[in-house]
Image 1 (cartoon, rainbow, N blue to C red):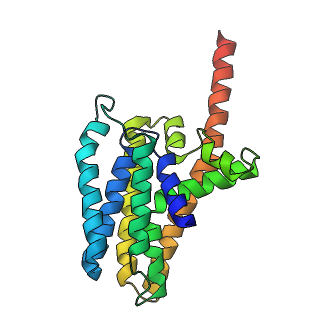
Image 2: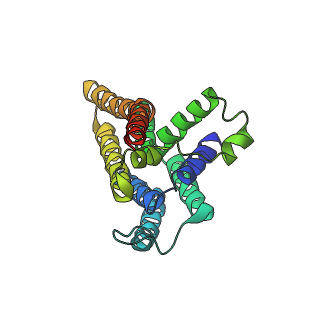
Image 3: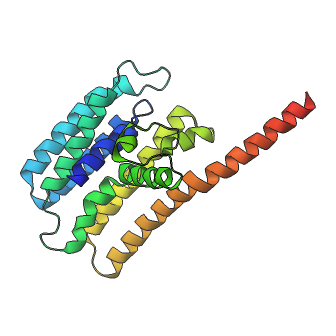
Length: 224
């Protein structure tokens, strides 16, 4: 239950830029499809392909390079994507041969999981949320895509960066599936480094950038 609620809300939290949640769900569904083909899990594969197809059909209208989106997911759409991805992950037989394979769906869904976890920890630590209800209803500009926007990447740059990270983690999940011993540890270490760098960026780089912006703003005000 915690997994389903968490992933459902994580995708909803990431639905802050045109094409972000839809494209991310398409990437996640792609890797679930590949894993299902490799492991012969037909039912999981059917659902993954169906979700992938629906996302790809929606994406051209939700993520346009030169114009704003013409249609949007809304809360109903983003929570549906999260709920479906959570269900696909749950139905997979991950630890049938090796316990380490349980980490495969965590890597595939690594971006929404890490974004939700880090922002939740920061919000609780700073006293911004004190209950589950406040957590569900809280809105703020502290998610990964907000951080990317704040340093000037722009809508396309922020979304594309998150796409690349999601693909990287998905490929790591595929490598982990066939890795043993030292290779598996190296894959997990690589994923850990990726998460560490994202966390460092979200917390410390943003603070430094904000400080630089404030200093520059004061200097401009002084010149005037």
